[in-house]
Length: 370
Image 1: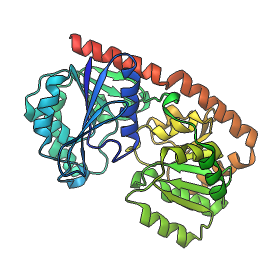
Image 2 (image 1 turned 30 degrees about the vertical axis):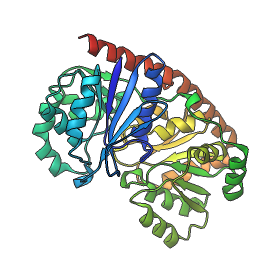
Image 3 (image 1 turned 90 degrees about the horizontal axis):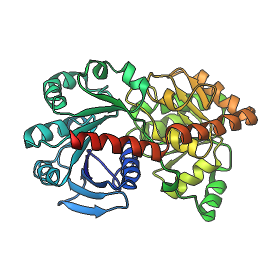
Image 4 (image 1 turned 45 degrees about the vertical axis):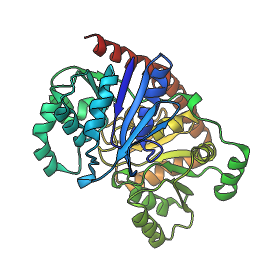
């Protein structure tokens, strides 16, 4: 079976949660015989192809990004070309330009959409976009939500007619290499042990301003790994608050990320807006048996992290509640370890790459045979 994955960004240019989710889907279903191509945009001058272990990545030049909607005119031709190769097309939402490309390209292959998030920030533009979206979803064979929480709380998903599935994101532990000893030693030399770790793109909805406020109250060590549009503002806030024990690493390699996860006390993920639909970083924390701290925002973060079972859940944008949760895990090391061990068990039971791969493989087969 041949599947074309279609999303606005992909590795190696961007390594966010959706990109990692696509990678894991490709790896898991690839073990069942599925061949994948990933069609995407990138800061390149001409169309180029990169062969990665999980898929052939076709990168078209990125030309415009109005309201963070990536566009490139060459995708229309490339989409038609690679759709001919595919048995199933897998589109990752939200990306309005993908809707336009599919509708105007005249492609009639089976389509599955993984619904990663509602459109939150561009409400006015969403109203203008809604006729195109309605036309696009009429052509979709199946829509996949990544958690029951999001399926229940999303007004758009609830109103969407047609077939809806729930398949969580997942990861294969074998796809994460253990950090080498030199990297571990270097991370320990810089940050020590038992810090509170955030990993991700520094975006507005990640709630990192609240994490800095919490750190100003409990004065615990925090490591923020990643880069993004909020980086300068967050560094300025940390400076203003006098947070000498908050460290910004910038973008980190997979090896450094693994070492950071191995040495931390807990993973803190204070996302405060529904744009955070799941949180692959939470699965990575569970992979390393680390307790999690998340906020209750009605999305998949509370599906991955069960309150008082795999971690702690606090109200969004509540610095004191977050500070107290961090302090509790810092003081009660046994409780923190129990949560981390339970998280690893939950990962293996509900979010393994094998289970996610089987679910998507069966869905691909069903759509291809319809």
